[in-house]
Image (cartoon, rainbow, N blue to C red; front, side, top):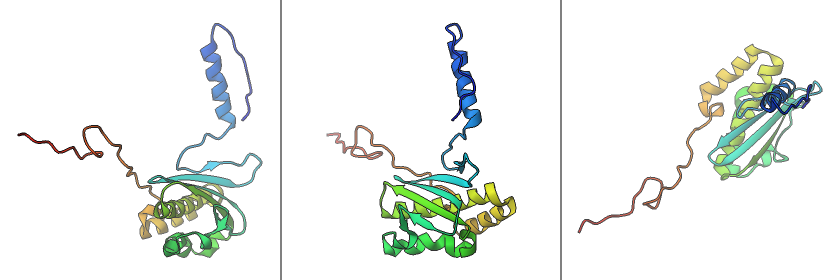
Length: 183
């Protein structure tokens, strides 16, 4: 981040602080959750996407490369559990290896259970590729990729908004109440 002007005065402290924040935001890319953001100050082509699935969080970094797909530093084929390996391969099988051959995707995932992590990873890979194609390739190929993914399975691009509801007083759970007797 760069600050172009740094002026403070006792009379207008609030105005000068807001001016500093505005100038910082002019030079830095402001991050937004779930959308790709530019992490490339020196001209390298990089986007990142953050996905929340239940309590699992996956962050995918997509940059120009030669087709490496890694999850927590391991190749995509070594991600456990093996039963859900096909779910991870769905974006690759749908779009073909040639679309992934020009990019490297690095995914970090933590939290949640195995299934939530797998679904977060596949969604992060799909959204990172769409974001990369939108920023650095062209809009037509991005739309084509998006249409293929949504036609097959909408959850590859659209997040599941369901979350665990917090427990309330007066009962054992979020909605259930303790049993009550009238006599």
